[in-house]
Amino acid sequence: MANDEAGESQPFCCNRCGAEVHPGRGDFYLVRIEALADPWPPVFSEEDLRRDPRAEIERLIEQMRGLSEQEAMDQVFRRWTLSLCGPCYRLWSENPVG
Image (cartoon, rainbow, N blue to C red; front, side):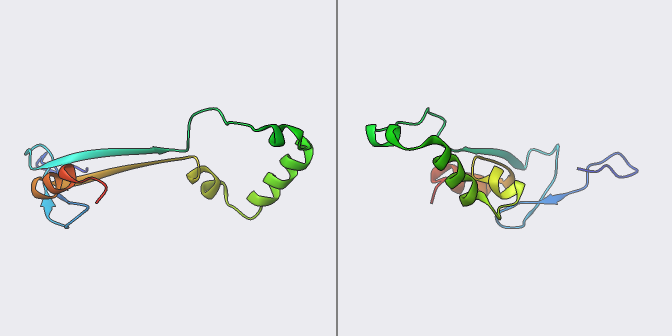
């Protein structure tokens, strides 16, 4: 959010519908979303424990080969910040996954 010479915030847009919103006027919501890969410790079976750890590490490295650092990180953690106008926020808050 940049300020103009008069000290007022420059308008920006709702990420859902594109409507202009204005910081400081109370006409939008800032929504922060974080997505984390399963944070619980892995569950291992007896079969998993019988596998060669070195071979498993090599398999995982090969599986990740070709991924950029960002692509690898996106598989573990992502963060989004959305600006939603009032009507879009109401729709989103009633059904955030729909």
